[in-house]
Image (cartoon, rainbow, N blue to C red; front, side, top):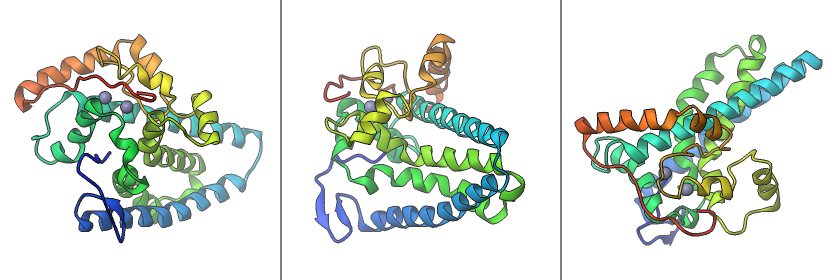
Length: 248
Ligand SMILES: [Zn+2]
Ligand SMILES: [Zn+2]
């Protein structure tokens, strides 16, 4: 999740404020993902379609639902750790990941000012180490449901930041409103809980489907206690802050 705090400039590769070399890496990541994902997705569709019956359809829907749940949970884990563990000075992940989550709490609308590449490229890049081995070595024909699970999982992973951005955006396309209303993707109302004091729940930002269960079983307090314990070794302080605005 890139930030747009610095003044963006219109350039050959779009409007951004960071080095062009970084922008090139972002665009190449998205392009490589698109090519490999198309190959993997088509193989998965063909594998499922080869033996289409009620059981296949049921297992395919189940695999897709489990993928959505896992994507949502992973988004919450990354978000909670980046909000509560370490600081912007933490080596490797501080500037790249923790910074953007911390700044999101002081300016939730910052991400709405970034374009598609800026907001989503990191997630495309992170998925490549999963996607490329799947295309090269996974026998999709023998593992249609595992393949379906991975196809849907990566689809939700790469659009998680976009979904989060939509939850903070005043006007979103009609189909997105439709998906938000049915909680397939994160809704502004649901996400507003996370941006309300004490800022210690509803970290999942893909669909939010796992937030109620994780809150009910007390998952976040346990994780935050771990963060406070680990924080004694890493330094830094958790993210807090006001966050009013559309869908904040
Ligand atoms: Zn947060
Ligand atoms: Zn947010």
